[in-house]
Length: 520
Image 1 (cartoon, helix red, strand yellow):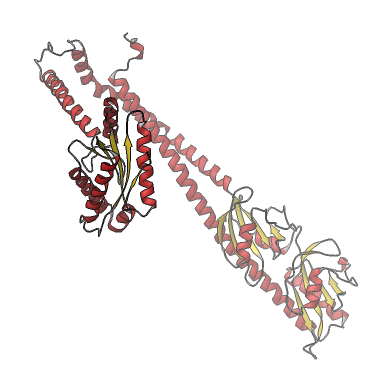
Image 2 (spheres, rainbow, N blue to C red):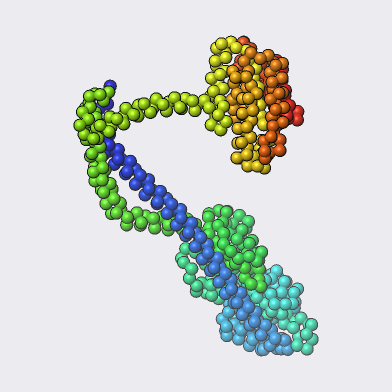
């Protein structure tokens, strides 16, 4: 039955279809690879930018804190002899507050924890006994400190660098401390300092204290909150806490590209993060723009392919029509032109060559290419033949001992040579009508027609000894293990082969270089 013309493709359509398919696959592959490469590059660049920016902000924060400590140190020294002078204290806190504008408020606390001076006055903190953990820490350890953020008695979230005030007459006598307070919520010197730098609107900048409390957040969403182990920034925070700076992709929560750096001489950490999805979207937009810009070139390319397909296929279509209109035997084809004559001769030669190839392939399909003996297909053919004839035969399953060690020590070329030499020894040691086959890598199967189990065992031992005594240089010695079984009518072929395999495994387990006979 002839197919309708609608379903038959001519050569021009085939060329055009495959060419278009290859072009589309190439374009799609190019865009997929570009997307992956650009995305990886963009992520790498974003991570590096975040890492560098985190290090820059860590340096800025460190310098800022050092500046605060220097200011407090100067004030503490100036008050060391006048701490009981209320007017002098008031003058100093007002100077410290207004001169640098580094603090939202300034307080002087005596060694009992009572605020004895404060600025601005409307703060109303004078006379208050401070009980915050940061206050206790400053009182207990008379040295310059940057305690953890805490909530002040007036309800402000505060970070308070402090400096001890020591008596100028008794250097070991602790009088109290002076502290400058920075309110973390709202407008403060730290947010203004860190917020004046630009790193892209998509990046988020956070500064965390030693216990994970958020001291600064460029998005003002988590100031005062504490970062926990399930937070996407936790792993980066812990790396920076260990004194390392670097960049990483978060493994918790939404994917974030994080740069991190520790603040020098503190347990604070600066984190700069950006959403990985933002990078992916940006690359997607770039790829979309490339596709849009390249559309005219693509259309021109497709048109050129269409024209070239017609030009290439035209001569072959004419030749195909002439061949189709002649007898299928090609005997009556008028060979008055070179193309037809060449085609006719080629078809005749091709038919003859095909017959030779089929014969060669039939031989090759039953021959092991390495050793030249029969393969598993040949083995199955022999088994089927003897089963049909009802011929009793012995089965020898043979395997090279420690063959993997030979390959590992001497290389696979030597291993192949050992297999070839063993195949030759087996052929020489068997009768002409015995079947010697290579059933696997270093495994051989011998089918011995007409032998009973005792004679088969004798042959197996003789072959095994010949192999052990043969020189397989450079290998010192090669030995084999053999399993023997017998097939008689009424027994499944698979059972006889399996019995030989089991006997072979028994020989392996019992020390190798031996023959084991299957129980019949």
